[in-house]
Amino acid sequence: MPVKKPPLPPARLRVCLQEFLSGQRSEHGAVAVIFALSMVVMTPLVLGVVDSYQNTLQRTQLQDALDAATLAAARSTAMTERDIDLIGDAALRANLVLPTGSALVRSDFTLTPANKVMASAEVTPGGIAPGLWPHQNLTANADVGRSVDRLEVALVLDNTGSMAGKKISTLKVAAKNLIDTLEAASLRSTEPTPLRISLVPFSMTVRVQGTTQTIAYDPVSHSGPDIPAWIDPEGVAHARLGVGLDIFDRQTDRFALLKQMNNTPWEGCVEARPRPYDIQDTAPVHGSPDTLFTPFFWPDEPDSAAGFYGYPNDYLPDGTNASSWLIREQNSGKYVSSPAVGFQAGSGYQLGPNGGCSLQPMIRLTPAFVDLKSAIDGMVAVGDTNIPLGLMWGWHSLSPNAPLADGSAYGTEGVRKIIILMTDGENTMGDPGSGAEQNRSYYSGLGYIWQGLLGIFGGSPTTRTQAMNSRLSTLCQNIKARDITLYTVRVEVKTGASAVLQACASSGDKYFDVQDVSQLNAAFAAIAGSIDTLHISH
Picture 1 (cartoon, one colour):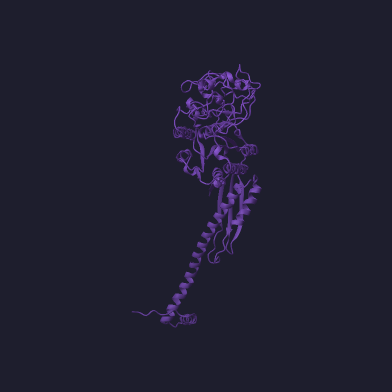
Picture 2: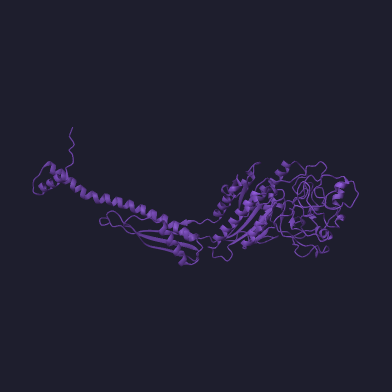
């Protein structure tokens, strides 16, 4: 077996090389010469490989830093090319780390007419052996399309009684923060009105407008100041529901009754339309009563003094000695005096025809964000949960169709419609729970259970919830079919399944199950970030 020879020391290598050059040959000299020559060849190659690796690394670092700087410039509120360039340059220098010998030659950030930030940068690489292996400058490019979509956003927010306390106070902060985030993002747009937001607080009904006076109402023409044309004061469609019974003994104008009651105002709440219009944005049409909206009017219920116990909203004398609770309740002739002042037993609602309608009025699509935040601050927690009615008015607020017709036409290029639905409970149609109370429900945006607006005329609380969930599921599908993005947020719901709201969302990442209300602000922040997404391209 041959014996490996140790490498020659440097001094001996010089001697061998001298011997070779002087014609003296030896085995040691030949090996030393070959080694020396190989080092002469290999060293530049090795240095070149190291240089190439470092340059590749520097190019990656340059691209990463340029991406971050371009995104920062695009997310800024700058609207001039000079300001865009200043912000981009500062961000690039803050993010770019260069090895010794390298230098940033140039960086340029421009704003195109298409509202896109274009960026490029160039670096001179240092290298270990720049004299042996010269390298070209390293370059990188990036562009970020700034958000140019016009946004129409509906905030559909649960204001039911279970939201009282920490929940509604946290909701107010989260909703206002979301508005601030979207407003700041909208400042980047060159559109004149890039962002409009509506607000729909809901409970068992929705208050579509504020307090409306009835003193100038004309019962003959069924019209008056500030009474919307899409309102049916007589509730013709409701009179045909179920077993043919309305809440009155004959077709009756609700506003006329309010006027007779010493000009009691209408507080602006409405009831759901009959099926299928309860979950469609079909425009209301006169001559088609089912498409119109009935004003919310909780009838006076039988007098406790007459032996009818358990009716929560008794605010007028019955005006009849009939033994039937229904005849007493439906008597339209008794509305000739002011309703009693006070609160209902059991429900805690105000006595009177507007009982339960103490919600904050909805705000139609608007760019007046200060007004929106003021309305959010005014939200109160009251009533049961009717998610379909709240979500339906969120859709109405974005729809191009009447009753509001504030939204852009469906399919308008550059317009995104978004609904954010937040609730802390399951759909509920409450039952006073008294054996003597024959209505078997509190009055709500669905009337009484026996009127059939829900598609059923009675049943347990579970049965009612299932019926409302079924309408909600179909409503969500109808909304998404119009290319409206749906976010759903479920807050501290300890009972029931999340399947309905989860399926309601446009995708899995747009459903938020918030088990601790303290995390609600984080959920809303995530939604705002999702809406305001910028994409990098190279």
